[in-house]
Image (cartoon, rainbow, N blue to C red; front, side):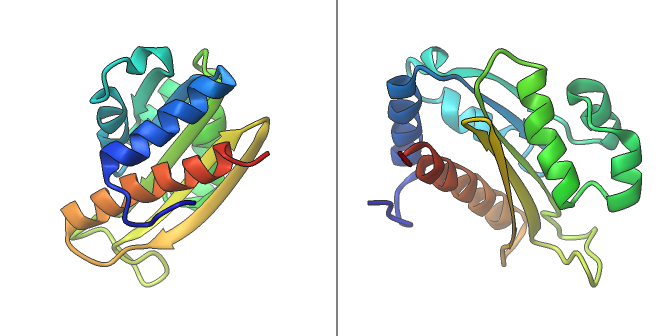
Length: 165
C-alpha cells in the first residue's frame, strides 16, 4: 500500500525494486526541480542498474535542444503546461535508452506566477508501459517546499504506476 508519509529514500527504494523487477530503466526530465529527482535516485547505491540518465531542462531552449520539445508548443502553451510536460516525458524517452520516464515543469517561486499559473503550480508527466499520463498539482509553501513536494509526488506516483498489473 502506498503511504504518503514515505521518506524519500523509501520511495526511491520502491521505485528501484519495481524497475528492477520489470527490467526497466528510468530517465528523468526536470525543470523546476533542477535535478533533485535524479539526485534522489542516484543517492541510492546500485542505481546504475535502473537509473539511465537525467535531463535538467530548465530553460525553454534546453527543453527544445536536449529532449526535442517543440518550441512552438512552448510558445503556444507556456513551459508550465500539460502539453509540455507530456512532450518532456516522451522526449526524454526518445533521447535515452530508458523504458520509463518522468518529467516535471513548474513554478517553484517565489516569483514567476500568474493568476492562471500561480506559484506552486507543477505539471507532471510519466511514460510507463507505452502510455503517457500527466497531472497538474499546486503545492503551498516556499521554493524549497514546492520543490521537495514535487520530487515526492513524482516518485510516489511513479511507484503507483509501476505497481499496477
